Structures are given as C-alpha cells and as structure tokens.
Image: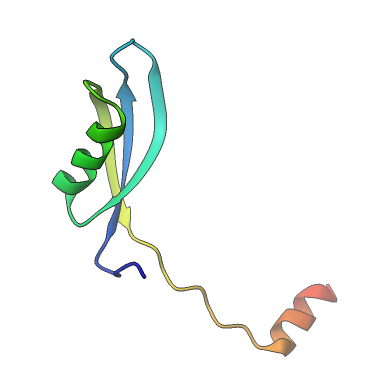
Length: 73
C-alpha cells in the first residue's frame, strides 16, 4: 500500500543517445528519491525539466444510487 506522503515527480529528459523523453512520472519520498529511481532506469540521462504534484488520492466512494444516476444520463 502506498503512503499518502509519496509525491509524484514529472520529468522531461534527454537519454544518453540524445532522444527526448517527456512525461515520465515517478513516485518518491522526495525529489532525490525520485531522481535516483529515474537514473536507475535511464543511465547517464540529462534532466531537462521537472515538476512535482501530490501523490495518489483515494477515489471517492460512490453509492449505488450515484452510479445508477450516472448510468441513466
């Protein structure tokens, strides 16, 4: 189970072969943790841009009536 303290870090990188990869999302305890995971997958990459957002949120609980009303629309 993922802790709610995890953040999502978005990266735009250039691989060691020169290809640009956009929209890489990695969860981590902090920026250093996410960057460490990134560099394990993409050795010798250059980070061009990074963003941070909140981690996963729990989905809202819907009642049967809520679901039925959505389906009848």
